[in-house]
Image (cartoon, rainbow, N blue to C red):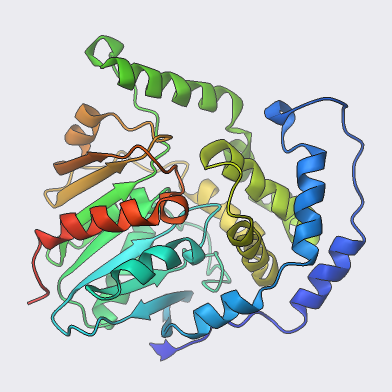
Length: 357
């Protein structure tokens, strides 16, 4: 375990701006909206904004946070590590998903750092947790890495929270390290449950119908990353516009639109400058054949945001569900667009778990 920084590789920002200036734009069909992917006019405006985007404030924000890096079985794991002024505070490990990054958690870190020790790792192959040590990095394996990370940081009692992939890794952490994980908090799952709709409320029927529409129209990215991550990786690594479009497509479909452009472009910058558009895609390949998730006895909370398809009675079968909160604002990217609501939910749930000692 060593201290670390989140410095981008030298020269990558200059190279990024040069490549953006030389973008080769494709021919597109006229008068089409989002149904065929990111519209050209939307992307042209975002690329113009990216050429003027200032990474320096984001770098300063990261530089102000203590960071660590560890090697577990050859895999580099980078994490933010924010210690509360209260030495007896409970520790939380916060896990992001794709196409997000540890940047997503920064607004929540700002709201929780007084009450918790916070550990925010980058998933293997994402950001500064690269390169990948090899194939086989499924959600259980990531949870095992997190358990080792928390042990090495000295936390014998901690909570786990996450959205998107983090909503799968966090319950796995409770399964692989139940002696130390005191609670799990999840949001932003994209899993569409197979349920008897006669058991659903009208609101649940509508939520499930929206999820099925998304599955029918919006899963090409997952098929491609889940079967041919190398193939898509060449474009993501060689063209910043391809990388940006790949992220924007999901932010539009799952998030609040228009988005926080500064955050969106910072995320694209992080993926581009670390070259992890390609390596992050392997998460989908490595998690395709995961076995069914066994239930956990660790108390679990679900925060439901408007775009989430989670059904309460299904979640109760999958987890030891002790808290269910439905939020009127926010989206799949709640840490970014509803940080007050998410931080409040995290405080309320983990308060029941007590201090670290």
